Image (cartoon, rainbow, N blue to C red; front, side, top):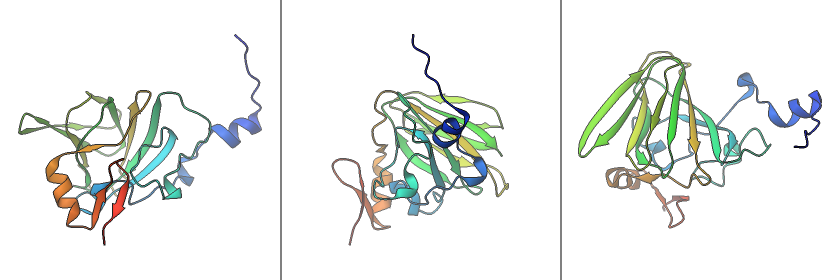
Amino acid sequence: MDVPFVSRDEMLANNVSRASEMRGSPLAFLDMRMPGHERENINIIGLNVTENMDDPALDPIIKAPAHGFSVGYIRARNGRGAALHAHETEEVFVPIRGQWEIYWLAGEEEQAVTLDVGDVVNVPLGIYRGFRCACDDPEALMLAVVGGPDAGKPNWHPSVLEAARETGLSVDDQGNLREDA
């Protein structure tokens, strides 16, 4: 195996993202205008899992390629987070600051687990899941990792699609965010 040479300057320019400088977007996904689902999504590296392809704030911060995964942060206030959605890949959540609740549907019944800083949950593929901040820390932050060669777009629970229409948002056939007139 050939070992590449990467200088410190190249590493800093292409492969490092400082937490203090990270900014994301308040409109990465269909549900983010719905009450209780306001949050900031920050795409750090990888597959750029988003529905709002027109927002440059959602481009991955680290431009170096990541093969088969994406890493991002989520910032949210207490009680706010993502609505029920599924992926065709696993999704891993790790609270970095504050408590976070991960919830999912087991049939039609909602189940949940509260995670403390450093806890890890791997949500299996195809399960409708969501998450919400479960603390009063205004700086609450959670790491999200989506795996697989193609993370695709979220598959929203039918109730989310209906509620999002009331906010003027929908997704097209390719899963890209649309603002309806």
